[in-house]
Image (cartoon, rainbow, N blue to C red; front, side):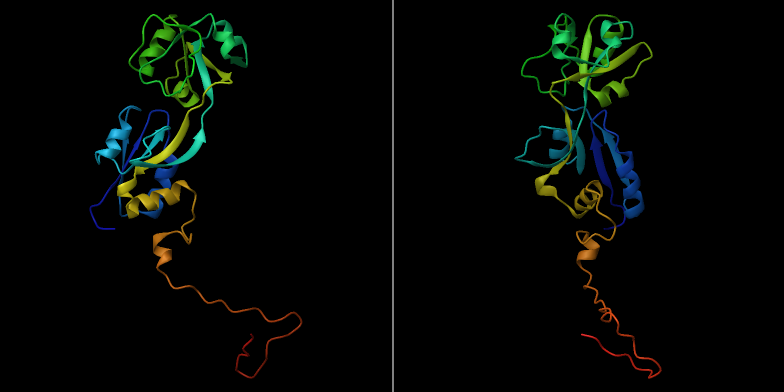
Length: 231
């Protein structure tokens, strides 16, 4: 790693990369990490065009040009006004939303075979705009839970929606640009320890030779000043 280098990490709204960034700062202190928040529809192009080295994305991505490691599935929720009937339940089904207007923003991250509820009067460009319309009482919004938390408002709440598509978060990077720094970050995300055999620095180190313990019941030689070799 050369001086002046940086690692550029993009992430889509709702993903919180802080814990991995902290580990990076501890393990690779000589390479600063720059965070770039990118809209879901733009993060793939950012990677392809070299604007970021890696990114936390929501699947699917183009696997012909990008490599990806799936990380976790998000709970799907519906955002509603606090006085809506849905707020009285712990969780709901898609059928429970059948008579409600449900917004489908252009940056929707869920893959629907059939969208829930009734089509709302407009398709907002962003999830943030859709949340504002929900607050105005114009309809409901179904999103991954992390986005509901990101756009939290005191006048809104959310409830789990069961039997719905789920958003899967993954770490992605350009396959043809799998650099040493990318490998370092993959190791951090996968939870490898600093002494992991998969680490680049450790892979170049010669293997350590360990001394076998003496057989049970045999005591080491005493007072001779010489060590007895055991096989």
